[in-house]
Length: 274
Image (cartoon, rainbow, N blue to C red):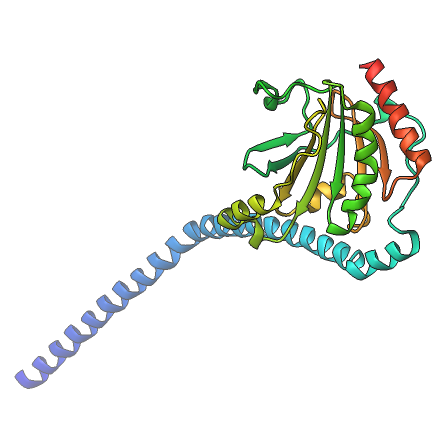
Protein backbone atom coordinates (compact mmCIF):
# COMPACT_ATOMS: atom_id res chain seq x y z
CA UNK A 1 0.00 0.00 0.00
CA UNK A 2 2.81 2.36 0.99
CA UNK A 3 4.62 1.54 -2.25
CA UNK A 4 1.51 2.24 -4.33
CA UNK A 5 0.93 5.51 -2.48
CA UNK A 6 4.52 6.64 -3.03
CA UNK A 7 4.30 5.75 -6.73
CA UNK A 8 1.08 7.79 -7.05
CA UNK A 9 2.58 10.82 -5.30
CA UNK A 10 5.67 10.65 -7.53
CA UNK A 11 3.56 10.60 -10.69
CA UNK A 12 1.52 13.58 -9.45
CA UNK A 13 4.73 15.56 -8.75
CA UNK A 14 6.15 14.83 -12.17
CA UNK A 15 2.86 15.79 -13.84
CA UNK A 16 2.67 19.05 -11.93
CA UNK A 17 6.30 19.81 -12.74
CA UNK A 18 5.72 19.17 -16.46
CA UNK A 19 2.67 21.45 -16.48
CA UNK A 20 4.72 24.13 -14.78
CA UNK A 21 7.50 23.84 -17.38
CA UNK A 22 5.02 23.79 -20.24
CA UNK A 23 3.37 26.88 -18.87
CA UNK A 24 6.73 28.59 -18.42
CA UNK A 25 7.94 27.77 -21.95
CA UNK A 26 4.55 28.59 -23.40
CA UNK A 27 4.59 31.96 -21.66
CA UNK A 28 8.14 32.67 -22.80
CA UNK A 29 7.31 31.86 -26.43
CA UNK A 30 4.16 33.93 -26.23
CA UNK A 31 6.05 36.85 -24.66
CA UNK A 32 8.70 36.74 -27.39
CA UNK A 33 6.15 36.52 -30.19
CA UNK A 34 4.08 39.24 -28.61
CA UNK A 35 7.01 41.63 -28.40
CA UNK A 36 8.24 41.09 -31.97
CA UNK A 37 5.21 42.47 -33.84
CA UNK A 38 5.41 45.73 -31.91
CA UNK A 39 9.09 46.22 -32.75
CA UNK A 40 9.47 44.76 -36.23
CA UNK A 41 7.28 47.21 -38.20
CA UNK A 42 9.37 50.17 -37.05
CA UNK A 43 12.59 48.31 -37.81
CA UNK A 44 11.34 47.24 -41.22
CA UNK A 45 10.08 50.74 -41.96
CA UNK A 46 13.39 52.35 -41.01
CA UNK A 47 15.38 49.83 -43.04
CA UNK A 48 13.06 50.14 -46.03
CA UNK A 49 13.22 53.95 -45.93
CA UNK A 50 17.01 53.91 -45.84
CA UNK A 51 17.25 51.38 -48.66
CA UNK A 52 14.67 53.21 -50.76
CA UNK A 53 16.58 56.48 -50.34
CA UNK A 54 19.88 54.79 -51.13
CA UNK A 55 18.43 53.06 -54.18
CA UNK A 56 16.79 56.31 -55.32
CA UNK A 57 20.17 58.06 -55.23
CA UNK A 58 21.75 55.14 -57.06
CA UNK A 59 19.01 55.05 -59.67
CA UNK A 60 19.50 58.72 -60.49
CA UNK A 61 23.27 58.35 -60.66
CA UNK A 62 22.93 55.23 -62.79
CA UNK A 63 20.45 56.93 -65.09
CA UNK A 64 22.72 59.97 -65.48
CA UNK A 65 25.70 57.76 -66.22
CA UNK A 66 23.69 55.69 -68.68
CA UNK A 67 22.64 58.86 -70.52
CA UNK A 68 26.21 60.08 -70.56
CA UNK A 69 27.63 56.80 -71.86
CA UNK A 70 24.98 56.65 -74.56
CA UNK A 71 25.75 60.21 -75.57
CA UNK A 72 29.51 59.66 -75.57
CA UNK A 73 29.18 56.47 -77.62
CA UNK A 74 26.97 58.21 -80.17
CA UNK A 75 29.36 61.15 -80.31
CA UNK A 76 32.69 59.35 -80.09
CA UNK A 77 36.01 60.07 -81.78
CA UNK A 78 35.17 58.31 -85.04
CA UNK A 79 31.87 60.17 -85.37
CA UNK A 80 33.67 63.45 -84.74
CA UNK A 81 36.36 62.52 -87.27
CA UNK A 82 33.78 61.64 -89.93
CA UNK A 83 32.03 64.97 -89.41
CA UNK A 84 35.34 66.79 -89.39
CA UNK A 85 36.23 65.34 -92.79
CA UNK A 86 32.86 66.44 -94.13
CA UNK A 87 32.93 70.07 -92.96
CA UNK A 88 36.53 70.70 -91.86
CA UNK A 89 35.41 71.81 -88.41
CA UNK A 90 32.89 74.35 -89.67
CA UNK A 91 29.85 72.86 -87.92
CA UNK A 92 27.92 76.08 -88.49
CA UNK A 93 28.42 79.58 -89.84
CA UNK A 94 29.30 82.34 -87.39
CA UNK A 95 26.63 84.76 -86.25
CA UNK A 96 26.26 87.74 -88.57
CA UNK A 97 24.76 89.96 -85.88
CA UNK A 98 24.78 90.10 -82.11
CA UNK A 99 22.51 87.74 -80.19
CA UNK A 100 19.95 89.88 -78.28
CA UNK A 101 20.79 90.18 -74.59
CA UNK A 102 17.33 88.94 -73.59
CA UNK A 103 17.80 85.61 -75.37
CA UNK A 104 21.55 85.20 -74.84
CA UNK A 105 22.73 82.25 -72.77
CA UNK A 106 25.00 82.81 -69.78
CA UNK A 107 28.47 81.35 -70.10
CA UNK A 108 28.74 78.52 -67.51
CA UNK A 109 31.25 79.03 -64.71
CA UNK A 110 34.54 77.43 -65.71
CA UNK A 111 37.62 77.01 -63.50
CA UNK A 112 40.85 77.53 -65.43
CA UNK A 113 44.55 77.61 -64.56
CA UNK A 114 47.35 79.77 -65.93
CA UNK A 115 50.71 78.23 -66.79
CA UNK A 116 52.17 79.84 -63.64
CA UNK A 117 49.71 77.88 -61.50
CA UNK A 118 47.32 80.73 -60.68
CA UNK A 119 43.64 79.87 -61.00
CA UNK A 120 40.67 81.83 -62.26
CA UNK A 121 36.96 81.35 -62.86
CA UNK A 122 35.37 82.45 -66.11
CA UNK A 123 33.42 84.52 -66.95
CA UNK A 124 34.73 87.67 -65.30
CA UNK A 125 31.69 89.73 -64.33
CA UNK A 126 30.94 92.53 -61.80
CA UNK A 127 29.72 89.86 -59.35
CA UNK A 128 32.82 87.73 -59.76
CA UNK A 129 35.36 87.39 -56.94
CA UNK A 130 38.13 87.50 -59.53
CA UNK A 131 37.83 91.29 -60.00
CA UNK A 132 39.24 91.95 -56.53
CA UNK A 133 42.75 91.45 -57.85
CA UNK A 134 44.63 94.57 -58.92
CA UNK A 135 45.62 93.18 -62.31
CA UNK A 136 42.14 92.06 -63.39
CA UNK A 137 39.31 94.46 -64.11
CA UNK A 138 35.83 93.66 -65.38
CA UNK A 139 36.07 93.65 -69.17
CA UNK A 140 33.35 95.17 -71.31
CA UNK A 141 33.84 92.34 -73.78
CA UNK A 142 35.62 89.00 -73.55
CA UNK A 143 36.58 86.73 -76.42
CA UNK A 144 36.77 83.15 -75.14
CA UNK A 145 38.23 80.56 -77.51
CA UNK A 146 37.65 76.91 -76.57
CA UNK A 147 39.92 74.11 -77.76
CA UNK A 148 39.14 70.52 -76.73
CA UNK A 149 41.80 68.89 -78.93
CA UNK A 150 45.17 69.98 -80.29
CA UNK A 151 43.74 69.86 -83.81
CA UNK A 152 41.77 73.05 -83.15
CA UNK A 153 44.68 75.25 -82.06
CA UNK A 154 45.26 76.68 -85.53
CA UNK A 155 41.53 77.34 -85.88
CA UNK A 156 41.61 79.37 -82.65
CA UNK A 157 44.52 81.46 -83.96
CA UNK A 158 42.57 82.36 -87.11
CA UNK A 159 40.16 84.29 -84.84
CA UNK A 160 42.37 85.54 -82.02
CA UNK A 161 45.17 86.96 -84.18
CA UNK A 162 43.02 89.49 -86.11
CA UNK A 163 41.15 90.25 -82.86
CA UNK A 164 44.45 91.19 -81.19
CA UNK A 165 45.61 93.21 -84.19
CA UNK A 166 42.41 95.25 -84.19
CA UNK A 167 41.82 95.78 -80.46
CA UNK A 168 45.35 95.47 -79.12
CA UNK A 169 45.29 98.95 -77.59
CA UNK A 170 42.07 98.46 -75.64
CA UNK A 171 42.10 97.97 -71.86
CA UNK A 172 38.44 97.04 -71.59
CA UNK A 173 38.67 93.68 -73.38
CA UNK A 174 39.93 90.24 -72.42
CA UNK A 175 41.07 87.42 -74.67
CA UNK A 176 41.21 83.88 -73.29
CA UNK A 177 42.32 80.78 -75.16
CA UNK A 178 41.12 77.79 -73.12
CA UNK A 179 42.61 74.34 -73.67
CA UNK A 180 40.71 71.44 -72.10
CA UNK A 181 42.71 68.59 -70.58
CA UNK A 182 40.37 65.78 -69.58
CA UNK A 183 42.90 62.99 -68.90
CA UNK A 184 42.64 62.22 -65.18
CA UNK A 185 46.36 61.41 -64.87
CA UNK A 186 47.35 64.84 -66.17
CA UNK A 187 45.07 66.41 -63.59
CA UNK A 188 47.07 65.05 -60.64
CA UNK A 189 48.80 67.90 -58.79
CA UNK A 190 52.49 66.96 -59.38
CA UNK A 191 51.94 66.07 -63.04
CA UNK A 192 49.75 69.12 -63.60
CA UNK A 193 52.48 71.39 -62.25
CA UNK A 194 55.06 69.87 -64.56
CA UNK A 195 52.67 69.99 -67.51
CA UNK A 196 51.90 73.68 -66.95
CA UNK A 197 55.60 74.43 -66.92
CA UNK A 198 56.03 72.64 -70.25
CA UNK A 199 53.00 74.41 -71.72
CA UNK A 200 54.26 77.89 -70.96
CA UNK A 201 54.19 79.97 -74.14
CA UNK A 202 56.27 83.05 -74.94
CA UNK A 203 54.44 86.36 -74.99
CA UNK A 204 54.44 87.55 -78.59
CA UNK A 205 52.37 90.65 -77.85
CA UNK A 206 54.52 92.49 -75.33
CA UNK A 207 53.74 95.85 -76.96
CA UNK A 208 50.01 95.21 -76.95
CA UNK A 209 47.77 96.37 -74.11
CA UNK A 210 45.37 93.50 -74.77
CA UNK A 211 47.09 90.21 -74.03
CA UNK A 212 46.28 86.72 -75.24
CA UNK A 213 45.82 84.71 -72.06
CA UNK A 214 46.38 80.99 -72.46
CA UNK A 215 44.63 79.02 -69.71
CA UNK A 216 43.89 75.34 -69.09
CA UNK A 217 40.80 73.55 -67.80
CA UNK A 218 41.50 70.21 -66.12
CA UNK A 219 39.08 67.37 -65.39
CA UNK A 220 35.73 66.18 -66.61
CA UNK A 221 33.77 68.88 -68.46
CA UNK A 222 30.88 66.82 -69.81
CA UNK A 223 28.21 69.00 -68.18
CA UNK A 224 29.93 72.17 -69.36
CA UNK A 225 29.98 70.86 -72.93
CA UNK A 226 26.32 69.93 -72.74
CA UNK A 227 25.34 73.38 -71.52
CA UNK A 228 27.02 75.26 -74.37
CA UNK A 229 26.10 72.54 -76.90
CA UNK A 230 29.56 71.41 -77.94
CA UNK A 231 28.86 68.90 -80.72
CA UNK A 232 32.32 68.05 -82.01
CA UNK A 233 35.49 67.97 -79.93
CA UNK A 234 37.84 68.29 -82.90
CA UNK A 235 36.80 71.82 -83.83
CA UNK A 236 37.25 75.18 -82.13
CA UNK A 237 34.53 77.28 -80.50
CA UNK A 238 34.73 81.07 -80.38
CA UNK A 239 32.45 82.93 -77.97
CA UNK A 240 32.04 86.67 -77.51
CA UNK A 241 30.81 87.58 -74.02
CA UNK A 242 29.38 90.84 -72.78
CA UNK A 243 30.05 92.44 -69.39
CA UNK A 244 27.43 90.22 -67.73
CA UNK A 245 28.99 87.01 -69.07
CA UNK A 246 26.30 86.35 -71.70
CA UNK A 247 27.21 84.75 -75.02
CA UNK A 248 26.38 87.43 -77.61
CA UNK A 249 28.16 85.97 -80.64
CA UNK A 250 29.76 82.66 -81.60
CA UNK A 251 31.87 81.16 -84.38
CA UNK A 252 33.25 77.71 -85.18
CA UNK A 253 36.25 76.11 -86.84
CA UNK A 254 38.60 78.16 -89.01
CA UNK A 255 37.58 81.77 -89.60
CA UNK A 256 36.79 83.03 -93.07
CA UNK A 257 37.56 86.67 -93.97
CA UNK A 258 33.84 87.45 -93.85
CA UNK A 259 33.47 85.87 -90.41
CA UNK A 260 36.48 87.79 -89.07
CA UNK A 261 34.81 90.99 -90.27
CA UNK A 262 31.61 89.97 -88.48
CA UNK A 263 33.49 89.27 -85.25
CA UNK A 264 35.25 92.63 -85.28
CA UNK A 265 32.05 94.48 -86.17
CA UNK A 266 30.03 92.78 -83.42
CA UNK A 267 32.81 93.46 -80.90
CA UNK A 268 32.77 97.18 -81.74
CA UNK A 269 28.98 97.30 -81.38
CA UNK A 270 29.14 95.49 -78.05
CA UNK A 271 31.80 97.91 -76.77
CA UNK A 272 29.54 100.83 -77.61
CA UNK A 273 26.53 99.27 -75.87
CA UNK A 274 28.31 98.39 -72.62
